[in-house]
Amino acid sequence: MGHDHDHGHDHGDSHDHDHDHGHTLPKDHGRAFLIGIALNLIIVVLEVGYGLVSHSMALVADAGHNLSDVLGLVLALGATVLAKRKPTARRTYGFRKSSILAALANATLLLLVTGGVVWESILRLRDPGIVHEKTVMVVAAIAVVINGASALLFLGGSKGDLNVRSAFLHLAGDAAIALGVVASGAIILFTGYYRLDPIVSIGVSVLILVSTWSLLRQSLNLVLDAVPEGVDPDKVRAYLCGLPSVIEIHDLHIWAMSTTETALTAHLVLSADSPQPSFVGEVCRGLNERFHIAHATVQVETTDAPRDCGLAADITTCQLEESAAS
Picture 1 (cartoon, rainbow, N blue to C red):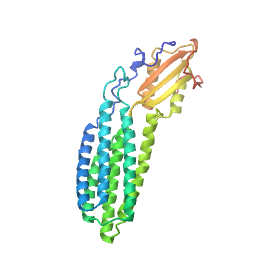
Picture 2 (cartoon, one colour):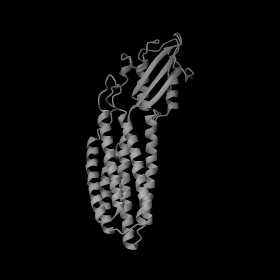
Picture 3 (cartoon, helix red, strand yellow):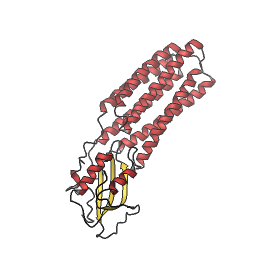
Picture 4 (cartoon, rainbow, N blue to C red):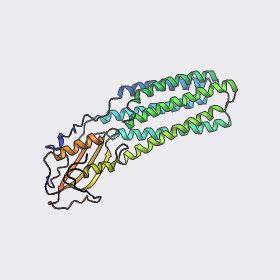
């Protein structure tokens, strides 16, 4: 097990570590994306048409927000399809990372459109105009129902997939905006205070911007190959150090292959009494079971082999234990 790049991909002992490349592919949300796209197109047509008829810039602005949802869902759907494409000689990881790029694009698009809504609302504070409140309330209520139903399609996968979460935030955010339009329309109907409409729109937009900033930060981190949230690199390092015969770790990297898959590479230096041939496979299985790292690449080195690894910049010296860490 010397320096021959066992690498976790020796396929003799390391690929019995449940690394079947299939069980971690993103769940198929294609139908949910298509339904969400269709429903949001209906909202766009309704809000633009009735917004112009009722002289409501709030409905027109919300229609623009929903149009951004359509574009975002199209991006997310495309990324889901690309993520399933098989690897090629050039793209050895396939197109898995397209789901991360889609999440980043969705977050950026949502920030831009929401910023546009805030700007339009600020302008309307000066000259709110007169709108047909009842029409605005009815159309906005329909938008609440449709957006809420669309968001529920993605609720189940919003925690485990950043791409699906971005779609969920898009739709839930639009439902919140539409609900704010309904509430402001009702108050305006009874008070005649038309400036309330842009005020409510600004308030809801700020809430959306806060949640979108978190999505943008996470997607940027994944694009830059940061350790995914939910994986503690210190615990991973401690687990590897606690393995029998491991005396040193270097070149440890943990990154996201997609919004649902995590990969790892590491060089493990072992004592002269090399472990059993099944060592690499057991390490990879442990990483999968403990940290949901399904794509682990482990290179094994021994103290009696030439120590000329040029990647040993970040070295962790381990205290040998009689048994593996529990």
